[in-house]
Amino acid sequence: MTEPAPAPSDLSQRYGAPAPWRRQALVAATAVLALVFLAWVAWVAWSHGTPAAESELVSYDVRSASSAIAHIDVQLEDGADATCRVRAFAEDHTTVGEISFTPQQGRNDVVIRTERLATSVDLIGCTTPDQERPR
Image (cartoon, rainbow, N blue to C red; front, side, top):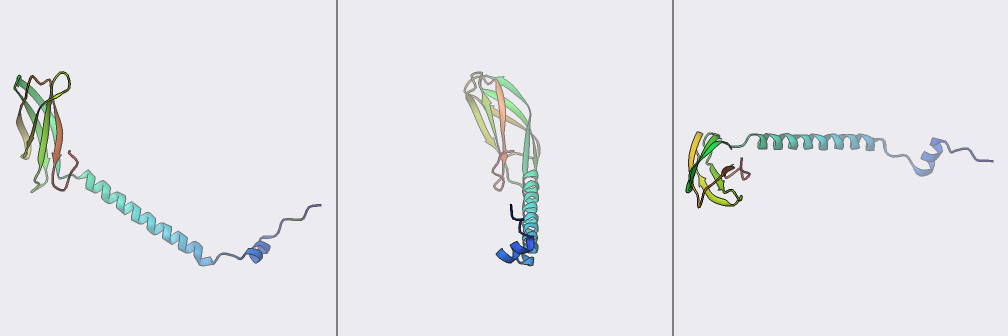
């Protein structure tokens, strides 16, 4: 014959019941941590979503074996001190020219001196002192 399972009141008498405030404290602490995390995620999304400098390679033109011209559109925040970098590549994918320049708001036409004939031009991006990731 088997013994019946002990009643819940027997367990709480045997092992003790948790304090009633513990559940409320755990829920409150979880809610506070969730709010802090969501605020952090919103701040990170906003700060990375609104860079001080953004750039886009519109087109490029290889003029000769010693130069290429890149047409770059740059959007800057007011007063942003930016630096942009452009590279030219040869047919075998080696870098044959590179230039860093201080952009102006809007379209920038940049001449890249090359060691030999370039077949493509790549915009690395623009950075500011507060924005280390090129964009």
